[in-house]
Length: 70
Image 1 (cartoon, helix red, strand yellow):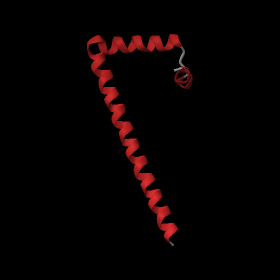
Image 2 (cartoon, helix red, strand yellow; image 1 turned 90 degrees about the vertical axis):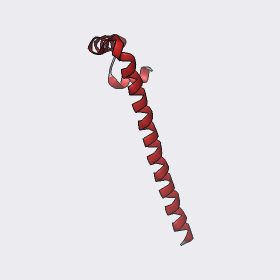
Image 3 (cartoon, one colour; image 1 turned 90 degrees about the horizontal axis):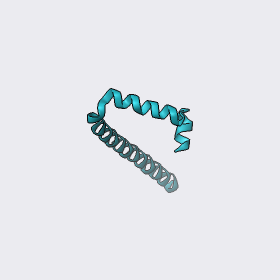
Image 4 (tube, one colour; image 1 turned 120 degrees about the horizontal axis):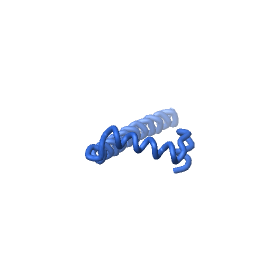
């Protein structure tokens, strides 16, 4: 995970402070459901991206098939 921290320019101390602020804002009772919903959203986003990639690949392969027939 060092690359993720380097991308955002966060060190370990900054990440710890950020997590503490999130805990204070949302509370310990709501935090698990918040993370669960965030994970579900990320999963749905990945599925959507994969669907678009599959459609683009199919369109590209059908276009190349049409060019090869001509």
